[in-house]
Length: 119
Image 1: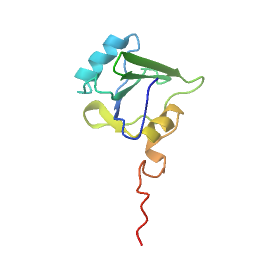
Image 2: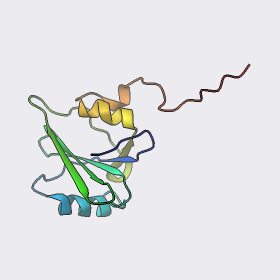
Image 3: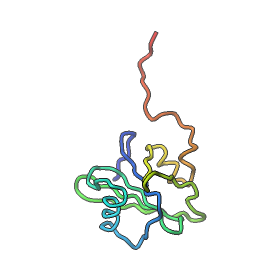
């Protein structure tokens, strides 16, 4: 199971990807295009050329997870844009993106806040 906590680094490929690529092809894209180590525990998010589906790639220490989501209707309209072809998301922003929403307009509180009350 993919564990996505507030501390998980989530990298999104800004440009669409050819989904004929399997795990090995996406690992290569993570290394070359996103300039990240696929074995780091980071979650990588890729969008199809048509924009109607996405894939998540993650390594859990024993192997790769590849998750695929295809919307029944429509497209992922609010795709993050990033410098040099990569954008970073927070865990709650990924949840919004997976539901087809706009992660930039979540208005959610920060993922961590101190519980210490100062008098």
